[in-house]
Image (cartoon, rainbow, N blue to C red):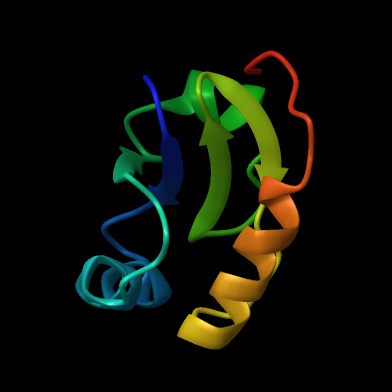
Length: 94
């Protein structure tokens, strides 16, 4: 897909995931789309992306993998981490 996608791995039983589902859409992050992935139903993707904690966020731009976002779920920290990720050249998706 063209543009910037934020892949968000979540789980129904995860408190932080429920908070992320409510908060992320209204944060105004500079992404074209949020892609929600249910970790409980997508074990193959969890393994491919090496997801170790939830929620887990990954950046993809124009079909290239830019990496994981390592930040607390606040607008300031996510925006800064996103800016750093967008400086990367990217690689093939896992």
